[in-house]
Length: 479
Image 1 (cartoon, rainbow, N blue to C red):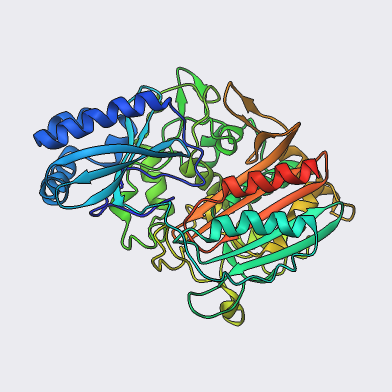
Image 2: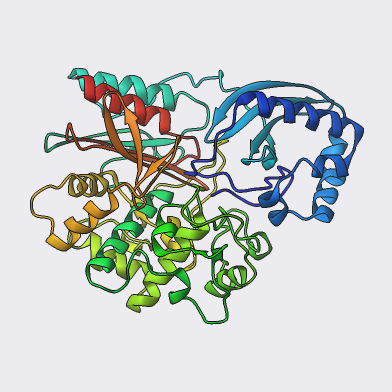
């Protein structure tokens, strides 16, 4: 989930949390060369011809032409481009224009067409902060020192503001805080500091689904249309229907974002607040699937948002109501909610984007709540991780629902997924993984069932934590 269109021309959502489909760098380099050529020729039609179906659903030719003529072409000649990094299926390049230096972001779909195309202010990632980074790490043990090494490497980047780390190991918990909850306030994040967890919410939605299945409220193989207005045509391709299961494991064929999303955005710093369930139904009314449901993984905020909407309808409760009654209260997760209570506002870390500028919170509507609305703390998230490991005391129906989410429901050469949870191979073990991103927060959770370890990382800045989480998980396995 990212912000909307402006000078940066973010033409398609890059999530977070997003698990974009990776393509070989050579393909991206080839498209980058064409982008440079057509930019310098001011060939709008040729540029637009590089785009794929999902891109065109978000940006029509007239809007694309307007942004190119008003915002991009006035930058002058694109003199050179150079590779910077690959992140979540997208490739970042340094693009030097006559009048500015920007980051060019390119992501391709399965057909090699542009799915993500963006320009952002360029920042030198080799530039580092100097001086003292606030921390409460006692540096007493080998684990403390490993955490410090990983955390400082993250925090010395120019943009990060604060970082809360939780580690669960053999039933014991450790917490570490770095930086500040608000720039300049001198307050180090602690286990009770509240962050937006973004798409980690999807694992909670999957658990709610598991509970609903256990109660007989719905079945994984039910057609999605069973829970939609009769006016919405069947979500199917060549007779293969989209089911509840395919919403949760991202194989429904519903694209990453609704095609009518951008036109509903009122505030680019809080883009999901104004997208209604009516908007979602309007999108589904005109949607035609392009492949068989269950046949291909495509990470979809829209699909899991729809699943959350269905669960709210089935139970007649808000998403927060479901969260509190089904998961938060049974696990004593007192700080895990959708809406921040006034008494807790001082513990809510301020959010900053990936350039370190203040962004503020995202308030996801009911249509997208299931995809990313939850706020939580490192303390609560380790309680959640412990429950996922099968810790004694978890109510039976909830434990069974969590086990269901951890059962592989789809796999191909690149992806294995249960319901909500992604399986990653780390060292000699598989781990349960998810990450999250909102406008001003990035998060990570990894759970190693075999070694009974878990890592939670919460940042109030839009800089990815995936590498840091992976490093800590690998170290814990070896030590």
